[in-house]
Amino acid sequence: MKLKLPEIAENKKIALAVSGGTDSMALLWLFKTEFKGSFYVINVEHGIRGEASVSDSKFVEDFCKKHGIEFKGFCVNAPEYAKEKRISLELAARELRHAIFSDEIKKGFCDFVATAHHKNDQAETVLLRICRGTGIYGLQGIAPIKNFLIRPLLNYSKTELAEYLSENDIPHCNDETNEFDNITRNYFRLNVIPKIEKKFPQFCDSVTRLTRAATEAEDFARSLIDEPIKTISGGYKIKMPFKHPYLFKKEIGVCFEKSGVIQDVEERHFELILNLASDLNGKRLDMPFGITVYKESDGLAFEKKRDKESLFLPLSNIFADSEFGRLFKLSKVDEKADGLKCDWDKIPKTAVLRYRKDGDKFTKFGGGTKNLGDFLTDKKIPLRLRDNLLVIANENDILLIVGVEISDKIKIDENTKTVLSVKGENNVR
Image (cartoon, rainbow, N blue to C red; front, top):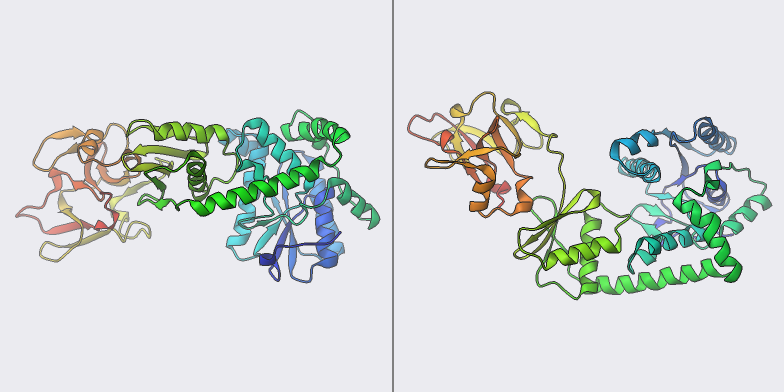
């Protein structure tokens, strides 16, 4: 066996994701014996298998200590996270693990994280996606390199990795949960693939060829599409006219990717969005992964949902806040100021900066109170932008909609002494 790294990862510092199992120990020993650059080991104990899991982590740590390899151990509670997020235990473990990997990258501890995915993992992934209903995009399987993740073992089988450990007398751990076929991926590993390989011994090699062909097709399609447009609210938009359905799906996939969704987008999700594209303007579709898709007059917009309770900032604090302070400025009435302007002294001390919510009311300039949603409809503010609008509110009384309008209640008059101005750079129109 030879360690083959993508050219972009050569001479970089690499973190190895090592659980102690056959695959990851083969990866570790390959790096130990062949890699000339800098690397270290990351081990994540997921809190799933009790003492057995803790023992496996201790095994990896002791092995690294014995061979002079830098080791970093992390402990997470995947069962608790899965319950909190209402997701599968497998997905919870993956999200927590990848969050750790991402943090290592962001802090500059490494340039890439190498995982021990191999040829059999590739076959399992492709079969699983086919059964769930994938398109050509999903047939690409596990990519050799994806963002900060590299998979140097994709060309080797599970059997080859086990033989490599045996030949080099390298110990490893056995995860007993790998034998439970009530886990979907294990079901394919234990029951499906072995039966296929009895009839077609080169099955995993055939899947590898399929993933390469699918990647070539996807790369070609990607070269024919337009990059989605970044929206002012931080989402992404596909402008009309829409392309051929195949290319249109590629643009949809790019929007998901740019929104941070890189797993588990299935063909049925694409079909739902294609149906939305031919629906009436103003319609929307709530997708998994916290993404909402909006049909608008000029295209489709993809927005990440916000936590509406995440912002409740007293006005006295906005000027010191690093995120919002740049938008707000106090000045004397005769000074020049950009953006929306209102009478600071008319704003109650109990007012806060927050996102809009149901039940909000707004007093229009010149008088007359309306439901905030109706007012925004009158102003032709796109539906996707409304939940992301910042407002200054005193309970449900909206005094200022950032980038849109001020209430009649805080307008400047002949008695105004201090002006609050909100920069126009946050204007949504």
